[in-house]
Image (cartoon, rainbow, N blue to C red; front, side, top):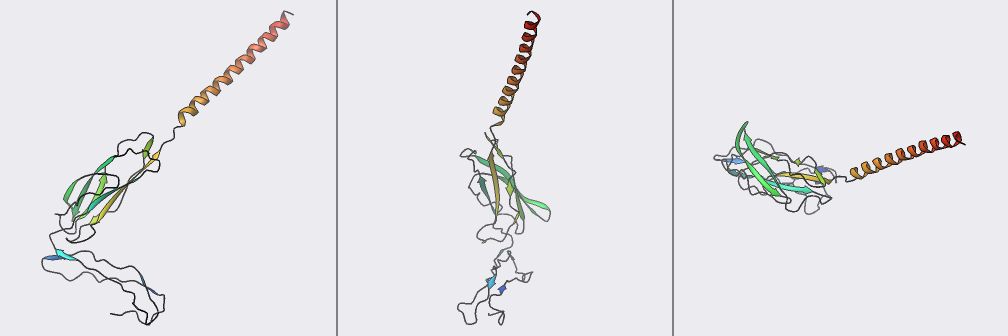
Length: 209
C-alpha cells in the first residue's frame, strides 16, 4: 500500500502502530518491531522505500526468556585472564517476584537462556557482585543495561541485559615520591647542621686567636 504521496522528495517518514492490538484467544502479542525512518524518493523510482512493522504472537503462558552478556573494558591489561564475574537476576510481574537466580560469566560470554518458563510480560533485571580485587588496578562502577520485558516464545534475538566492567591501572609512583621527599628533607637538615657547626668553629678561632 503506497502512502505519503505528494510530499516533497527527501521527506523523512516514521511509522507507529495503534495499541492495544486485538486480543487473541490463548495467545499474547510481543512488543511490535517498528522500522526506522524512511526517506521519500522521486516519483516513479523503484523500489519504493518500505517501512516494515512486525508483530509476533505466541502462547500467552510461554515466555521466550532473556540472556545476560558480560563485557570488559581493560585498556591497561590489569585483569587476569579467566577472571569470572557473578551476580543475580530477578523477574517481577505486577510487583511480585516470579523468578530469580544467579549467573557467572567471564568477559565476552553470554549466559544460557534465563526466565524461559516465566509469564509473558515479566520484567527482568540484573545485579552484579563486587568483583575480586585486582593487583595494580581498580574497578569502576559497573554499567548495567536497563531491565527487559519477556516476550512470547519465538522472539529472535532474545532480549539481552549487558553488564560492563571497566578496570584501570593504579599509579605506582606514590612510594618513590615519599622517599624522595624524605631524602630531601634529610639533606636540608644536614646542611643546616653543618652551617651551625662552621659558625661555632669561626667564633672559637677568633676567641683563642
